[in-house]
Amino acid sequence: MARQIPLNTLRFFEAAARLGSFVKAAHELNLTHGAVSRQIRLLEQTLGIALFERRNRGVFLTAQGERLRAVTEDAFERIDATVQALREPARQAPLVVSCEPTISMKWLIPRLGDFARRYPEVPLHIFASGGPVAFQRDGVDVALRRNDFHWSAELHAEKVCDEWVGPVCAPTLLKRRQLDLPAQKILHTASRKSAWPNWRSVSATSASHSGSQTYEHFYLSLQAACAGLGVAIGSVFMTQEEIGSARLVAPFGFMRDGSAYFLLSSRPFETDPRRVAFLAWLRQQMHYLPA
Image (cartoon, rainbow, N blue to C red; front, side, top):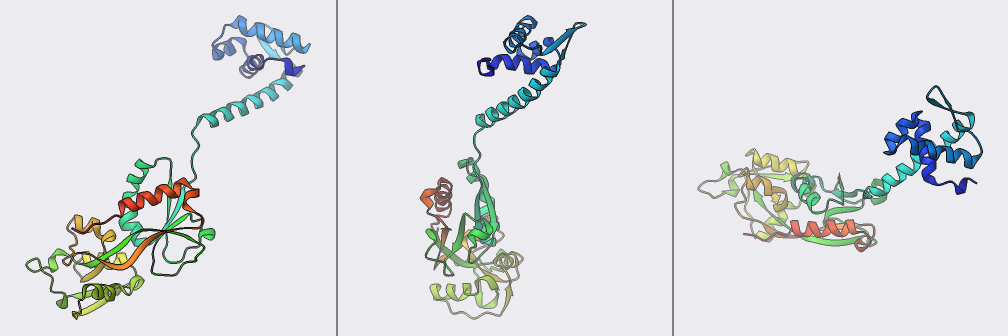
């Protein structure tokens, strides 16, 4: 019998039972008091039971009415919640991006606003890490890495761009816009020990220097260079902000050092539109042409 009862009639009953008033139910449903009263009488006649007691200009649920109220209130709450969820656009899970700390700090994070404007449907979560990637353990989707270590052939790797490097220093170390490199202290980084030897090799420079200092991370050596403590090797991608603000200068420009940045993934890129979007954006943003 319940299957023959229109859902609308149960909605009238649920509102009246919840609010304890036909008048309030009519106001909520944007109907007249008489329309609500008639629908509830029709429901009572159909069920063959009284759902409300009508006395002293008020209405009160009977025991049977209480039982029906509990069921209809729960049912309509669930229906309303489901309809609301269907109306809201589905939110994509964040794309978890593992990125070397210095690139993340100096290049990626300052540009996340641009990515969000271009791809508002692809939220990103940045995970700062370098070297081999534990995709499963750390829940990583893609990893931006320079090819200075071996990765598994099972990984999917897409080249993003070549690496460009060069000596950088504070403008105060220049004399007549020139840098006397042999007279300067050389700043090394433990996380990229071959930076200076590689640059000397590609630039055919074999100049000696007056001393050296080693820092644990690349960004620390760049900070030391900004402070005028010596000359560091900088990636063009890690020093763009400082060069743009004249905190650093690159007296010899930037050169390819033979390495490159790759985006690594544990699954094919074409199976995930988020991965495809992030790869395309990286390639556009990291495209570099020397002046």
